[in-house]
Amino acid sequence: MTDPLYSLITIVNKEDVYQAFKAGLEKQTGVDYELIRINNENNEYNSARKAFNDAAKKAKGKYLVFLHPDIRFLNEHALKDVLDQIRSLPKDFGVAGIAGSPQELVDNDRVILTTIIHGGHKEHVGRPITGPTPVQTLDECFFVIARDYWEKQPFPAKEGWHLYAVEQCLLAQKDQRENYVVPAAIWHTSDGKSEDFRYTLQVKQLIKEYRAQTASINTTVKRWPTRGLGAKIFVNTYLAKMYLKYLLKNKRIR
Image (cartoon, rainbow, N blue to C red; front, side, top):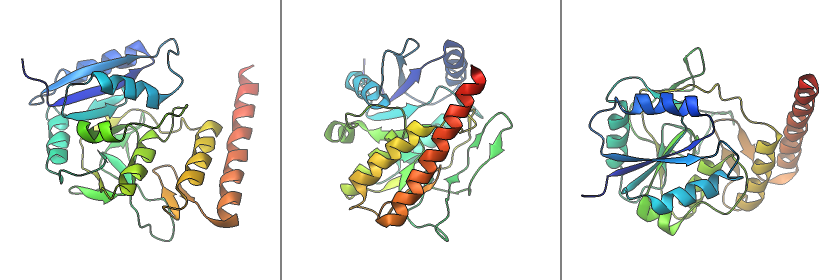
């Protein structure tokens, strides 16, 4: 038996969400894949990076496809269309995905390049693209790394559940590789509002590590300047706001 072309890797926190994802995946046509499920319903992992590294070590595919289980495909060819576009990229591409932010922004504003819809109301977000487009970073909901490149540059050993695709993109740029976003007929059912103060703490860590490489880290959440007093004030103000929201939310729950 030959190895599959693609290894689809997903972290499972809720069984019903995963089963709905799997049902949709089984309707996809023309894709030679294996599905690797990472169980985390009992908090087996404290790091998405470690979970993905562990799964990637078992993967047999030429391409590693990391995706959230709340991804839904809008037609039976959606997955094939995305992966065919990624396979057509230059062989030395870094990371490719379905939603991202470019290196150059307009008026220093956040820019999202994507054709996906998201949330319960299936809203279109960002600016649509018509073909593979270079970006600085990608969203974590769906991204692809060639296995031979992952072997050279696995996910760094860090705790937490945020910004792992963003960091892989920054590492790829450091290796002089281009990252890309491609059009996709995909629905990300999350509303994209899961970030809390822990997200911002990880942003601060990335700023410290990559400020020499780039003047800003442009994500689908926000543009994060990396240098000077203004950058420190900006990220710390955002952190304080997110931490306050976290405290108020937990107070209401109690």
